[in-house]
Image 1: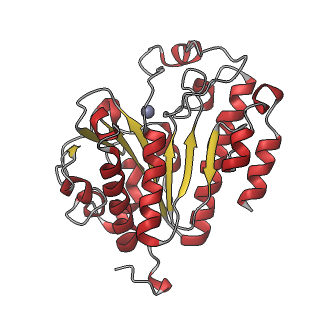
Image 2 (image 1 turned 90 degrees about the vertical axis):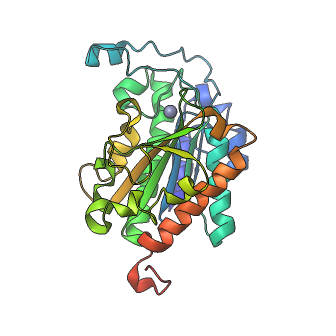
Image 3 (image 1 turned 120 degrees about the vertical axis):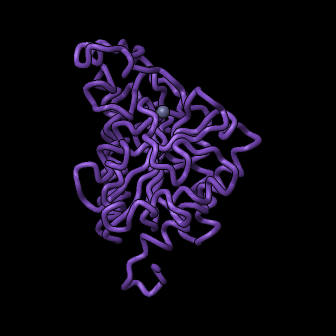
Length: 287
Ligand SMILES: [Zn+2]
């Protein structure tokens, strides 16, 4: 079912991006090869919208005019490149597979944020029809995978991976101060996110500096507290699917540290899955 949808999308890409389709054959990509979208078996969906560098021919850089008109501010408009978050996402998926024998769902952007910002609503994200098709491929994949996870597991979690340019050692949590994880807080309690056995605890134990600190009731950094993707696909407006944005400092996604960070993040998601996402009637535990 998913692969039918992938092929459909790939066929719908216009001539301006079709020449980028070589990677598509290798990776099963969509969006003319500018998006990797691979289905999984676990109720975990990894997303990385800002780690791409590939440019679409004939599509100019965004100007932000729609963003400025709508918001009256330039602060929501950015070309910032989240280096290595694509590599990190694939490494986290591999770590999870090594630990469980199962795969998370993965959606990774290869396009440049100068042309498409997948972490914005469509009207602010693109300024051409060609870019819109690739943007839609990214979001159709997220939407389809989320729906499939809910149909199979009844609940699930999306992790949206980003990089920030501040303190290179710090990882910022973004949940709109708990609103994109409303479901897990209401059904499992705040500890499921920030307690000793919660989602982020293995990261803290691996020595990663979390902001807010794990267990702290402090508010999240307002500039990094969760963007469009986690607000749209998490439980902000209800439902049983949660979403967490993780913004990593440069050192955490540099070549030296990236494997260890990916391993810690993979472990944290596997522990979270076993404790909070395995259905009680599956007979696999789910304590
Ligand atoms: Zn980002």
